[in-house]
Image 1 (cartoon, rainbow over the protein chains, first blue to last red):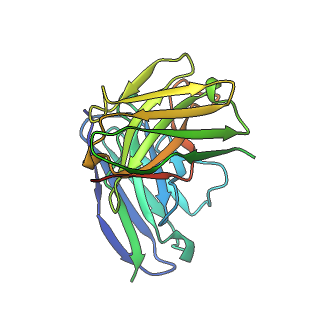
Image 2 (cartoon, helix red, strand yellow):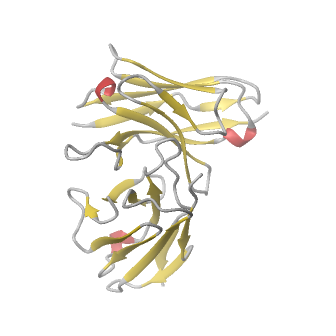
Length: 108
Length: 123
């Protein structure tokens, strides 16, 4: 099975900061990686698919990059509504669709 | 409006059964790939099951043989039948659409999510 790790697990940041989250896969997944944002009590929201394609309606301050086993999600200038938990998900293996353990972005 | 509305959660004793429902509007369940994802309180997301438009189904190892995913095309509704429930099945269960963009042949993400329904397995 493909395993995903995320770093850091927790991140304290201020409004306006540039934030980068890393997701690593245990084996190559090409660019079959998605990023989600989840706020407390809410369902996850798809932000990025194909490792770097912004989902419709998602602000351009979000960007994704990477291929193979290492991926990054970057928020260029953190906004108040961006404090949330972020998950990566691999879609290379259609039998498992594994999620990463999450990165919580909190107020510094 | 495109949306999914999940229901059916509640308190169940270990070894018991529960059926979750997920009513879709704004799109057709049977023409899409539909999934269930769960989230343990305070923890991360776990993919549970998928049903493809052709009807084939797949399950996570943790639920295979106990859970069954299905759909009712006339009601445009997705289901998850959960049997032999365990304490560790306690979670918020989300239904979601596994999205295949028009220019792709693979699922690229889960783009429409229900609001989640809490299943608590406890004696």
